[in-house]
Length: 385
Image 1: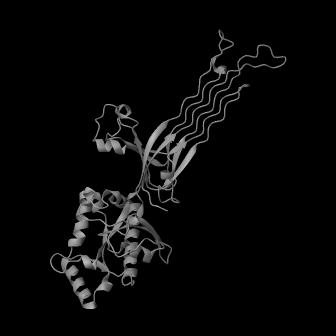
Image 2: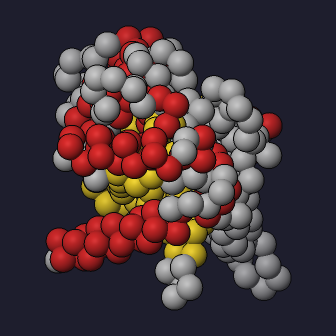
């Protein structure tokens, strides 16, 4: 299945049912009076995060989602049935943005502005629309839409469009001066919104590095993931997820992020398309092919290039804990490997030298990855109240 991390869809909540105009007509009951019931409320459109999905591919196939309308009221004070909610499942890590319909709607809603406050609703982080008098941001921000929900854990829900209220039957309009009201109200229309869905994958560890560093080979060696592997740059064009399970049953999710090049923070190469996926990882395994280690000069040049791009994209991203790895040591002999280790020792940087193909050093690397994830989990538990 193709990996799709962005989609634009339209959601439409159900319309409320109309109120009923009816009078009680029953044998031996004179002047029975009005008995028209209310219409049922329209169904809501609800997003629910689930770990069973890994991509937004389905939303490229279907663009319109509509909840059920409420049923009209009936005589004998029977209320119409409410429309069923439409629950749309999305992958964990999905961001929901509300897009403007046109420039006038944008001006009224204040879309594209910043400074809106977040709040918890239905277990998801939801953002209030800004006030009308707030200033608009750049045109690019407008195109992206306003972030309204972040479904960052399994089971998180967000009501994207609320159904319309059902209309009132004529039973509500009787009075001492109007005993036979012929007035009812129609059901209200449900909300109709255009949304942009963006997926930022959630993983314990992100594999980053220059193209052709062997990231896909590593994730295939330590998990059941089977990404495309070839001896040329940019073999990986979409993120791959793998689950690594230890003998003790500990599990960690590893994301293979496509290769980054100089200028990635400015959109060069695969650029922003995949730097955003690194934002949700807890820590990083920074891989460098032994072929990209300069024979002379700064031994850290390859690592520093990618680190600079991370810092230019997001300073918080650059501060994530890293495990540095030099891969493909099967291409050099023992003497060259010993010299390489000495160069990194002189630089004062701990580096794991491995071969993802032969398995040399891989078990030690996995143990270090599990130790780091375990340490981060413990520190996060200590921070939580």
